[in-house]
Image (cartoon, rainbow, N blue to C red; front, side, top):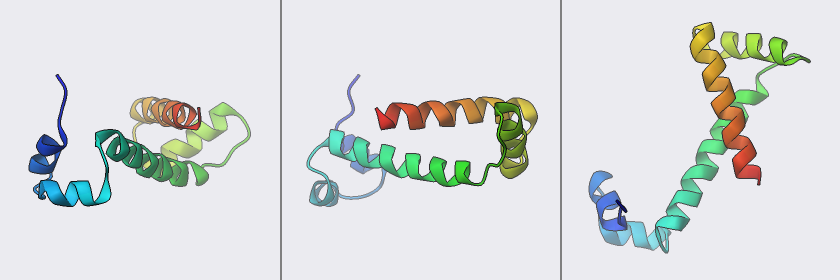
Length: 87
């Protein structure tokens, strides 16, 4: 089902008024969260070196300190999120 800003404010332990002070609606809040997450992902990806996908994936594994399996899926998800946000 749908989630209201009231439910979001309760889960975040802040007043509903504070949420509305910064965001007109939940779409605006969602957009802000996507921008914040995409910025974190971009910062992480900037530390990746390499020319080929294989080199970049190896670098991502080293930078993120993940197992190769987890790193591969995290890398693919991060790239997908950035692609969607840039559309």
